[in-house]
Image (cartoon, rainbow, N blue to C red; front, side):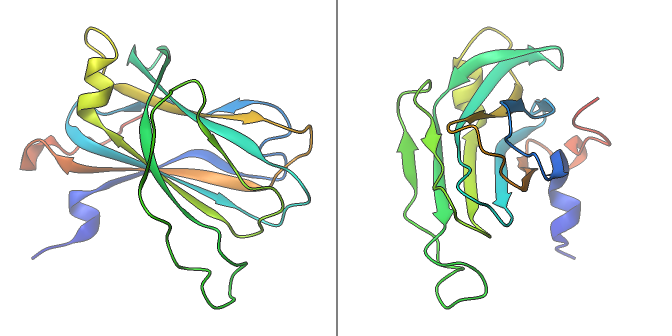
Amino acid sequence: MNVWSEKNKVVSVIAPSADFAAGDVTSDIVDMANYKKLTFIVATGATTVGKSTITVNAGISNASCATQITFKYRTQIAAIPPASGSDVSSALTAVTVAATGLAMTASKSGGIYIVEVDADVVAAAGTLYDHVSITLTEDDGTAQIGCVLAILSDPRSAQAILPTAIG
């Protein structure tokens, strides 16, 4: 049987919060050692004008993850849910300058940012790098409501599913 939840590991790396980005926030660090892909789902709630810049970090352990890396992303911000078109994804776009990151759109209630991280990019960032985090850097001093989920996928082997990816 092909069961999605048995092939993918879902981790809440930034819990839903009313001050999601009232200051810069970095997620829990995720161990990618046994996976080839990591997708961060950044979901915004009801916002005022708050927005952040998204960057992705790589490192060697759950205590060291500070090297910014490039990534690809899609957005679902064409309309506020449940309006028509609110579930339409943008084209896959590459962030080619790691420090520049992705600037979120202000005042986008119910926006979704899909951040794709490839294990090869993580490994190329430094010796023994296989850990990843996401940082939301406050752009305007206004709190934004939201959360971030990490989905590990494409396990290197069927037995590679970790009981925990943040320990």
